[in-house]
Length: 153
Image 1: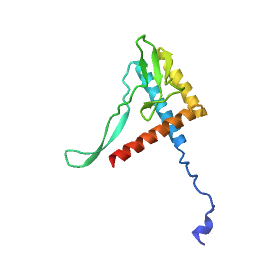
Image 2: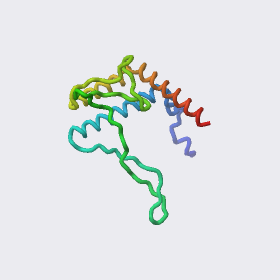
Image 3: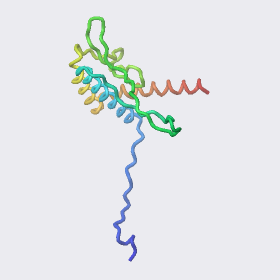
Image 4: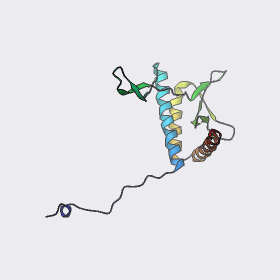
């Protein structure tokens, strides 16, 4: 008896992941917000937040290539103004993402309120409330990268 005849064959194919730039930017922003939440939680607990990063290959004493793990630098998304009020800024492509025209910062008051604000922002991103701002920031980032590539050539 043939082995193929004993198997249950089907015409199913794996689902193709959409190559949607908005979905990629949204997922990246969600990751950054989760990282900011971890960082503010660590700050409130009085400990340092140092996520690991695997570096490329280096040679050890025997001349063998090994991977090294180092602490990754993460930019804080919050700051305090002269009055001592804490503000939070979302960044896309390293630049502040305006939530309304001319307004990129969210006034929080004190740092202990920031985790709840980040949770609200995560829910807003998942619900698609910030899609227009994310798309605009991603387009601006794409234009900036295209200009950079032109100068390099």
